Every structure is written in C-alpha cells, then in structure tokens.
Image (cartoon, rainbow, N blue to C red; front, side, top):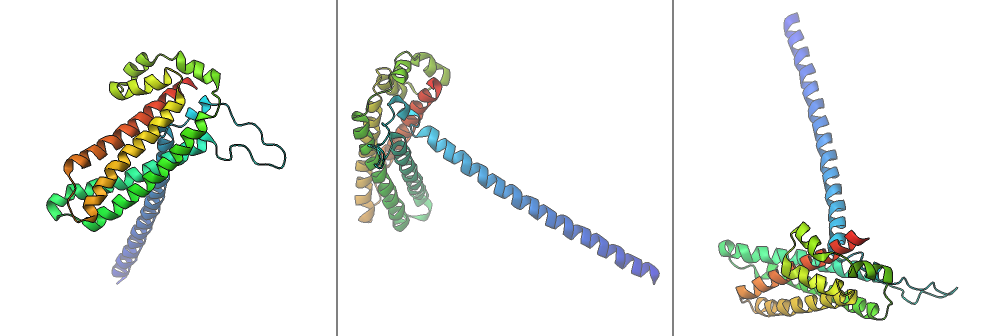
Length: 246
C-alpha cells in the first residue's frame, strides 16, 4: 500500500516538474518571438532609411532660422520629404510584390482578380503619394543653395574604386556617378520623380487589364518588376555614396 502511495506521489512530482518545464519553455519561446519581431522591425526601419536616398539632404544648406513668432520658410525639410517619398515607395513595392505572388500562383490556382486588383490599387496609391513627395522634393531642392563642403567631397570622390570595391551594377552606378560626380544632387531627385512616373504608367496599364478581368501581359509585369528593382538599387547606391563621404 505504501509502495503504491509512494509511486503516486512520485508521479505527481514528475508531472508537476513536466508542467513547470513546459510553462517555462513557452515563456522563453514567447520572449524569443517578441525579441525577433522587435529586431525585424528595427532592421526594416534602418534598411528602408539606408535605401531611400537618406543623407542626400546634407548636400544642401540648412534652412535659415525662423523669425520670432513665425514658422520656418521651409516647414517641411528636404530630409522629411526624402523619408516620406521613400516610405511610400516601399509600401507600394510591398503591395506589388503581393501582386506578383498572385500572378505566379495563377498557373496553379487560376487568376485571382479581386486580390490582384486590391494589391494593385494599393501599389498605385502609395506610389502616387511617393511621386507627390518627390515632386515637392525636387522643386524645393532646386531653390535651395548647396552645402559646398559636401559638394566638394562628391566632386573629389573616387567613384570607380568604390564601384569595384562593392561590385555595383555598372550601368546603374554610372548614372549615380554622372549626377553626384558633377555635384548635381538635385538631378538625383529629378531621377526619383522620373522613375516613379515611369512605373506608374506601367501600373495604369496593368490596372486597365485587371479591372476588365483580363490577365495582364507578362511583358508589362516584367517591366514593372525591372523598374521597381532598378529604382531600389539606384536609391541604395546614392545612399551608400553619401554614407561613405559623411
């Protein structure tokens, strides 16, 4: 009898230990999951900033101090416009990636016009917001004096060695070099505006087909993917040059 009671007692102890261990594992797993989510969030924010042409506003003189009781001449800074344009662009790119995913899976599941339309409309909306920010950016930069110290660094930068060191795509980096090597940072912003306009024209073509229930021409889909990718790389190369010279 005592042996049976001892066995039951031992089983209860072992079961209690197992429950405690399982609970602790779940707690650790929850902590690790939250930590991973936080790290992904921080990494994504920093990645977007580094790829959206940040630091280029340092090539311009800061706005003059506002007189007492009045707002600054430039209520929105060049840096804020760069971040705004880049943020909306990456949101657009996220939705167009979802659109591409639906195009890819259509060979198995058939076309999902409703899902495609939803993501395409969102991609267009955010890219229109991005282009509006870049329009304001290029216009504001055009009337803002350059910071001659930063321009001098750009003029004397060894672009060829930097390209070889990083293995950049030569065609895209040559375009970056053409602007920055001449001290023409505003030309970079004009390029941002042109890229978004070209991509929007392609998206409008896709929307016309999707809204009519027609599977989009694959060559147009390829062109959209190519231009989004080119713009991302172009913006990243610009940012990398400015991060190197600062």
